[in-house]
Length: 296
Image (cartoon, rainbow, N blue to C red):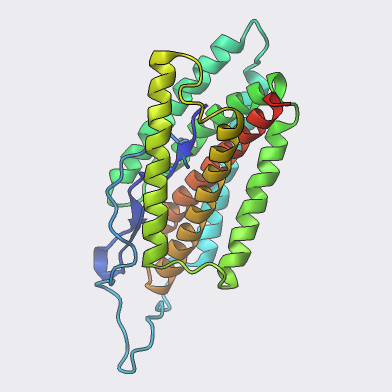
């Protein structure tokens, strides 16, 4: 299975027209996914460097978003994120229903799922290197990623661990809610040190998974055992925790984008980032549940 690792994506708010820039590198499909898996090429600056467009008044008060219909608001972010996730869920449900995973059809269904994952990753990469948000690319990414998730979830739920998909959904929602509450309450402080720690930890995680994959491909089995047994459980928990950290980075990105008056269309970038991170967390939960079930 593939985690949609959001870590290596280049996504952030633009610096055009005097608006504050904000780059973050938390991602396909998921990736991330991972993620999030499936590494995405990153070209992201440190989001906590001084913003060249942030303006302060004479007293040094923090910048406030000007009242303008052209600026991004929280409603814009919620609407775009809901649209993106809605498309992903619908295509996942259709893939689950229309691509059976019985003995006669599992090869074809899994092949379609992997093909959708590759297309989704390509679309995510294209968006990651674009200077501006492309709603068509983001929506298409969500649709293809949904097909992949639908097939993989159906395989795990029907052939490995009954009820795994619903458990992974509940786990993902629980992590999202917990991180949101912790972030709003100030229990999580997203600063330069936090950013650096998350980036370093994620790079190490991705490198270990890549080495494990190489050993699995050329040596057979599960490679170094990072995705099965006790080690698999430990790395699954680490993957979920990294996804939670990226959610905090996403929340900071959205908060700063609104505060600095990012253009309204950049709400699509926030939706893109949040979707990739949630896919990463879901895939790690699904993998973790599979390992726990196979250990019984």
